[in-house]
Image 1 (cartoon, rainbow, N blue to C red):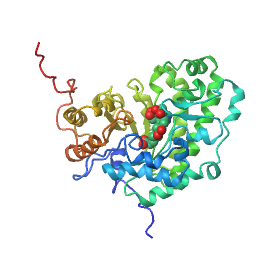
Image 2: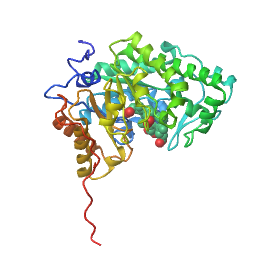
Image 3: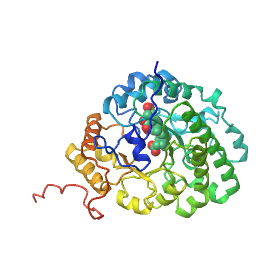
Image 4: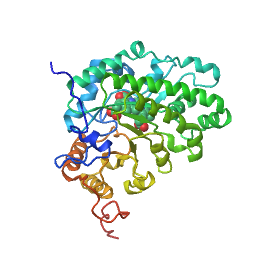
Length: 376
Ligand code: CP3
């Protein structure tokens, strides 16, 4: 047995880009997709079976197979562990489910200091043994890096306090601003869960981690600065202390106004959604981090010509800067045709470049080909 492959910036385009280094001539711009596993793949359903998604997550053989499916199919530059941001909360015994077609739901949402006791600290050896086993199986099979992940405190709290996916996030915002002491205690507990989860994934062999703060963009930058950034920074610092070589990705949607703070929280790579051009994101982060993104997942449902034009525009918008990891601006939609994703990977691999900017940095504001002229 040779043991798992050790991925380094010398061997992995993803890790090179995450470190802001130029790509190799043969594989300049790495690409993977958030939610690349799961419902967009026909081969997912027989493996997932009839149980809940949490059942599949805690069955290492099934979680391993589901993680590998998109890697085999697309030739992406990374795998992402098949799990969910609520897995550690579920493992702590809080009482959370993933309701099909809805998302995370809690029968008894977080409402007062009494509920802090329901977020029991995790003992990774006992509570996350299934996850450690999955990571071991994955790194024994994979020839590309495995990305581990956890949910950031704000995005997790949004589900725990609201009890279900929310449009206005009113309850979690009012807890934060109205009972700041309780908010910080809740966020501290959730940060501890994230730290235990990420360090267990890294110890088992994950080569990078992503902190999902998907809903942070609903906050004004001042609220984010005061109530959220310190907690996410503590998580990212704990990973850096324990594993200085592991790149830390920090992701949310609608975060155009937060990109500088999300970088400043201690990220190596910041996720950018489709609402912000990469060139703008680079200015806002002062070139201090690598960027990941930023194709609109909805456009992947359209004809290939539209997708192709968008991919080319995004690559041109990046303008050859080292430190670009191609991805969608959010997760793959379940109705996406997998063939489109395969063609995106091939196009990014053949057309991407990361050998430095060549043209004057300009804003490209006309993303899509003009529609057919009107016949009226
Ligand atoms: O990216 C990957 O391939 C790894 C797998 C992954 C899942 N969830 C599996 C999953 C990842 C990275 C997540 C993270 C996650 N989960 C986030 C952060 C990323 C984001 O989308 O912003 C959030 C907010 C969640 C919470 C969650 N879990 C939602 C909103 C849903 C959708 C519910 C639905 O039915 O529409 C889930 C369920 C979920 N997580 C599915 C998968 C494959 C689908 C459930 C199924 O297979 O039945």
